[in-house]
Image 1 (cartoon, each protein chain N blue to C red):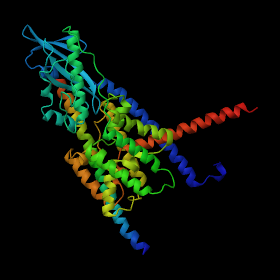
Image 2: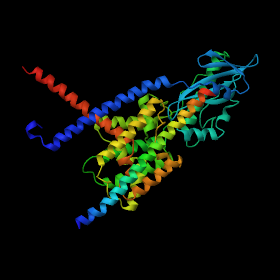
Image 3: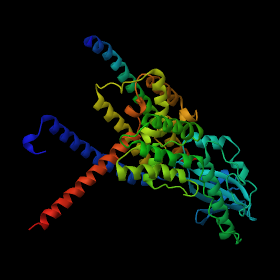
Image 4: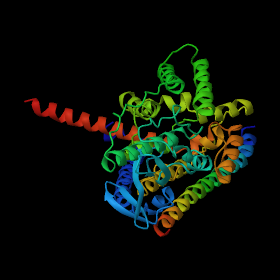
Length: 48
Length: 407
């Protein structure tokens, strides 16, 4: 019984860890897209 | 614990604590370095804003104090002055064109640190155009002679205040006009402030041991936080606010009591009592996740495998967000929280995708955002660590002094 629980829990854990890592990638995309926006703005304001 | 009684787990705990402290010091030093490097990067030109504020002019001549005389050909057609006030994210500068009679001819945003969605909301509306034709002696106050933008109140207020400053600067220094004595802005103390004080009190009392109806009280504070501070006013604690506080971008207290209560309250309660009433008791986004958890029957705190590694990833993201904000002197620059995405339905496609995944995960595990991604948690860890370390140092100093005083 305990073994069964462990066996079903492991793939679920892996799925959750995978989702969390995917969220981490999304967070990094969000941070760097904000950063790119800021860099674009400062470059534009220096050259307009 | 002396060396003889040390177990392998206690020594690994000691080692881990030491590593945490060393990394905390390194993180702190990198933030300071980012701040100083950031000082050398500030070079955005304000000239485009001068032309935007007064497009009829073809030449601007600096007359000092961030003011410019504007000419068309050889004719002086007005002045443009730069007003500055702290907005939601940091300093906000506005170029204000004033004619020789003291009337505002036009305004333009010269620079800002606001969250892009807030500023977009202002720029998409006709908010800026309502300043044209006003005179320097007008009050320039929201809900009085200026209509603010819902969902961007802090930004609207900072623009109005900057315009007032700049128009009055031109009136006194260039036009020799008498400016009415500046009245202190009316103190804003309303539903969000009262709710926040009540929630702090309930959260603080709720954490005491043996309290009857603790569970019910916690649900009441969570739901109040979610509906009032979240959906109604959209004013949760964010890393932008912590960054603004640390960078010294403190807004006018009269119109921002909520800001001071929120940030000051967190630091005060942590310092005095090492308690975090906010996260567990009334964080609006935490409450939203718990509601989803109640629907889905979430019981687990998430996978225990790779827990440490995931914790360090969370801390790394928070560090990156703070360092970038300090480097560009922009508190909201690297904010990746999805609170506004839920409560205000604003944000990028990535933010909506992230929100969707987090809310679905909340059905099965408790507070996935708080446990694995929220940048505030690592900030609170640093505050806790600093507090414990300071107390330890203090005790060591006292013990040494006592030992020396015993003959």
